[in-house]
Length: 500
Image 1 (cartoon, rainbow, N blue to C red):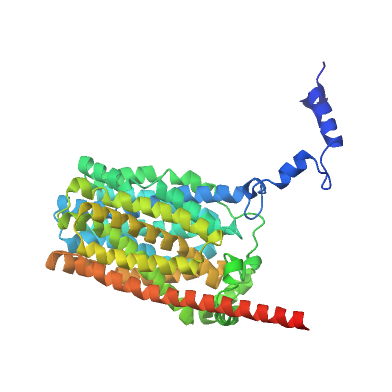
Image 2: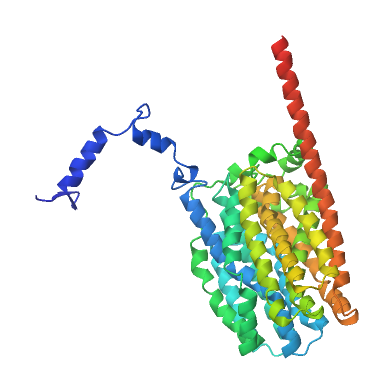
């Protein structure tokens, strides 16, 4: 049979006949055919649109964001191994060896407000690949470091690039979602965490074989692989900043959170809603107090404290867990499993927490309260036990709590302050976190070199976690009271309507 051509393209007559037959017999909305019943019973993930918010392209962007953030997680999770490598190879004291890695994390946090200035000048979609490229180049330059000062400067710049990668990739990711932002952030964190589970072991093998500087050089070369993934992240065409002036994650949950507090927050944020025109941006920049009144509220201050404790606990554990395990007598063969076990717990919690919150199984406030409570208990047990099995189990649980809390950092900021304020709120929170991180070398030097034990430092961190736990417990209690009073009012109104 001869093949016909339509618009210059060959079309088989069999295909044409099939299309005509299907069009005449296609199922209609009121048709009770087997196909229509099957289509109506499809699971939600098969009914997903190809474009738009919470669509197939949105989840593809979540995967790209996870692959882009792999260098960030790799650098953070190998700090402990690099710290021990500097101690053994360069014969530094613990106070000196902690400075390069402290500046790595502190610069990524202190320079956070500069990211907002860069965002105003250069598009975020262009800043992200540039940050990935600069991050890899900075690690390569560490090969030429000859002393402590040089490697500290290089790693400080590397930390700033890591902050840019995390903030910009998270911002682009959030723009693709409206209802499933928590789950999307969990998927992104799961990908980046899963790819770096054995990062400490890989870094330990590189340091043992080639030394610290060569290991950092090889890591920088592999970090270039994140550049192609960052090029795929773009602001979606359908996204509009005006639609996000009151943007919140999990609206069905956040609308039930402390009605009085939310109304106060909305009044405070009314004057700070972002306007899209460049002229309005310039006029609003002249008065930062009017632009960001929410930064003066007690709620934002508590958020900053919570984020500061979250990141400092995670970075401190990643830095000192391996060295602490060696100090309390755990063999090196067993101590090498401490950080990978932590990474496994981190991976599990990042995935499960986001899915559970989006499925309304638990609120994000309850997840934070539970994580801080369990983490404080684990840190206390970490001080009182020296068995390798118990240490590894506690490391897994601490990884779970850290993974859940870190995943919820952008979620809690977007929930309480809106998506348009994600970059400034994250920048200010990280700036305060970095200022606190600067004090870490003196703490590490005092407890590690003078006291010869990190027990006091871990107990101090456990106390800070207990303080955060008490705050989030109060918010959960207030939320429960609000929901209970609302349900009682609705039930009372229904009974009065029935009696009338």
